[in-house]
Image (cartoon, rainbow, N blue to C red; front, top):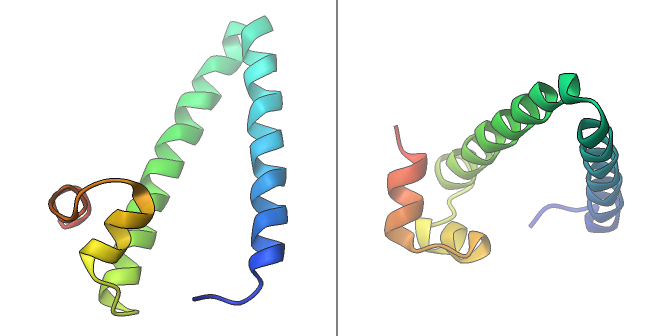
Length: 82
């Protein structure tokens, strides 16, 4: 487990607030909507990158990773292996 969990939680809360602010902006300005799509793709890509690193570099099993994501081991393996 990584250190700095409190800092991670605080940072995650900051990012969530920022995304909610962008959602409110996109609700009033359709030109902002593509930014949300781009952020969603970056988050999806980042989840995959993190999951693969946890497995390959840090020895976490696909079952351990899957349980944290609320999906099955098979789904995690299929989704995150290339």
